[in-house]
Image 1 (cartoon, one colour):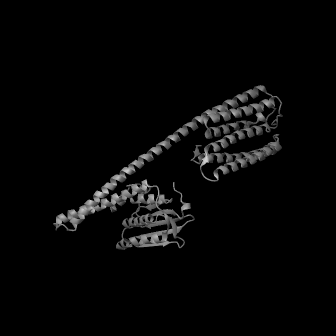
Image 2 (cartoon, rainbow, N blue to C red):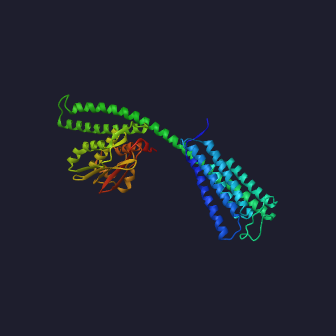
Image 3 (cartoon, one colour):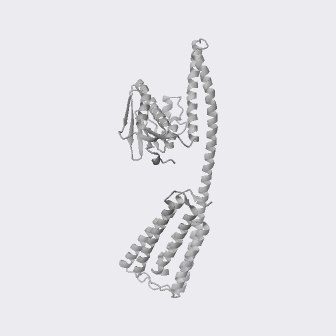
Length: 449
């Protein structure tokens, strides 16, 4: 089966050559005009402008050819694109040789522009192909100076730039050709060496990333099994403690009741932690969420209603503003509602009494922006970048609530990313925090990395 290019970078390099060629075309036209009219150097203007036009037509042809390969999907045949790049470099060398012929040949200092082509070839092609392109360039240049030396083809002397024509100066020709040839092969050797080492390093990084992802998957599967088992045992312990705490098996003394209630509360918190860890692990292992169109407006209103009582208990102002145009989006309604509810509960927990919490929902072109702002304790500046890490809790948050899990924001990040959105926080310690996230409005506008 023919290898298929998964990574679009190789195709982008082919387009990059086309972009460079447009720069070369403009440079030929501007350079010819400047040298002829300003520097008064004798040039074969008509031929040079004609080559620039042909070069432009050739570039358009290459562009259409590449577009033909890439128009249907991103999986482009590797060999086809590689052949196009090889052809482009060879054709560029041929065109450069013709340009040199009509602009002084060996007298033209731009002869060393061949080096740029060798650098490009060494970056884009294999070592063998790079040396073949270098050999082709040497043959082209050698043939040009030989034909001009033997006067088989006319020589267009750069009068006004060199004191005399040099195309018949044997020593100068041999010296220049020797330097030209050795320079090209040295450039190919050094560039290919660097490019090969970079490719090997890139491949090693890819293999390491694959290995790390596999190890991460194995770890998540292990955590999933362990937490599932722990959750079952905790549920049994919690049920037994609840029976004793509710005095269904007999009365308890005050001291006994106190210890049982403590154990029951701790077990309940631990069960909640294990449940969140289990949920996070399941999300990490499952690539997809079941998604459908749902009303974000109703979801936000439902989340606000769920926390209103807790906000009232702390005499807080809880406001929500939803733009009239916001309604249907594509996603998992249950996970979005749970995430918004948890973010609101966090804001209530870490905001002192009589504070303010405000949720704003705004419509963008392809997405919806949700912002949850509070006048709470804020996050220390040096810890803002860590709040979405698993198990991380800010130092001032631990003082307010010692029993937090440090998993809520990590789960929120997972949910938003699974929907193809982004989540971030702006915060100032002692002033408050604003958590913001975007959600694509439709399946077609999702961009999942």
